[in-house]
Image (tube, rainbow, N blue to C red; front, side, top):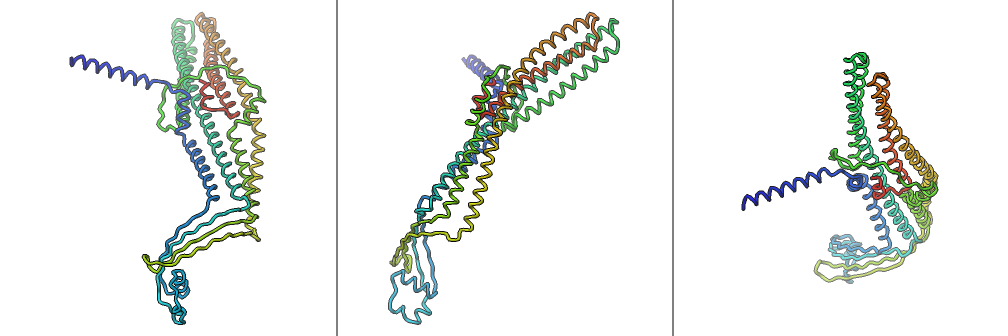
Amino acid sequence: MSSRLFRSLGLFLLFCMGALAAAAQEPLTLRQAINQALGQNPETAIARAGNQDAKAAAALARTALLPQLGFTEDISRGNDPVYVFGSKLRQGQFTLADFAVNALNRPQPIGNFSTKLSGSWMAFDSFKTQKGIRRADLFKASAASSAKAVDQQIVFRVVGAYQSVLYAQREIDVAQHEQETAAALLASVDDHVKAGLAVESDRMSALVNVAARKQELIAAQGDLELAWAQLSEAMGATDLKATELKPIEPHAFPELPLEQEIATAAKARPDLAALGQAQSAQASAVGAAKSDFGPRVSAYGNWEEDRGSIGSSGGNNWVAGVQISVDILPIGKRSQLARESAAKQKIDAQVAASQQHLRLEVSQAHIHKQTAALSLETARAAMDQAAESLRILKNRYGAGLATITDLLRAEDAERQSQSNYWHAVYGNAMSYTELLYATGTLTPDAAEELQ
């Protein structure tokens, strides 16, 4: 019975270990890399903190509409004539004897326990508060749009870094294949030299070719390490280890008219939306600065209780009123208005410049996408042709109908064609990513279509 139990337990542990090993070998998908970046990249945390700050500022602006209430408990003692006279009056303990000249000039020290409640409310400030609230709300919306723009920047960088790793891995595959081909070619040349069908210089050329292929493999390995470092930085993962990535296969992407893409960008670009919202917010700031010249109406009230000791009875009093004020020498307010107006002119110019640059950015991305798609087709055909040419020249060299120089040229052309092909695959995917970014539609879901 115990042996069966141990056998079952052992099989269960083996199954769990196999499952864990399979899970560990699961390739890292592009969507997983993007999700991790959006959760861990410090730039995302900065953008979210700015968003929270803007929300708090919007809530703070609304507090200006609320009444201000205060409570004060004051304990004092002294013999200052004015203090003694006033305290006795407020305590309700003033008598005829307190009118004596000596009592007025040299009073005995007394204590006062004062409890105060005070309140004020800005009833009207020429709509300055309302405009300030609108300004804060628009800045809050601008911060939210800016956070979306940061997210798209991070997605763009992750896609680029992810693609760089894939391209570097392909370059290593090509370099390793070419190194094996060079070694096989060297062995073939050695056989030809021994058989008297080739000269020693052919063997030297083959040796140089082997060394060159080894150098290319070393360079490709260095490029891969750098690509992993870039992906790690883009994902905000300082401890990211090299792992298998899910390949991005070459395929055609949707083709839309340029004018439609420009119209989409004008509506969807979060950075432009943030700038436009900041422009409206600054217009509200100018309006608030103008309203500051207008009259202000405020209400106030105070209630106070004074006692000679903490447990004794005393007197209480209250005051309430309405105050109307106008600044008749608003020099500082004029300077503030000039400052806000200058800031408005600056952001107006920024919006105009961004709108003008929008068409160029989308047009460039559109052209890059079209060019990359054509380059991919050409590179695929060139790679097939180079492989066939190398096959023919190998046969010709084996038959003594071609020189080692011809064969090395064909081998180099075949290697370059493979590198060009994978570079075209990388460029095709990145050009589509660039177009999504330029039109403001580079969401994690959209990026997932690449894979």
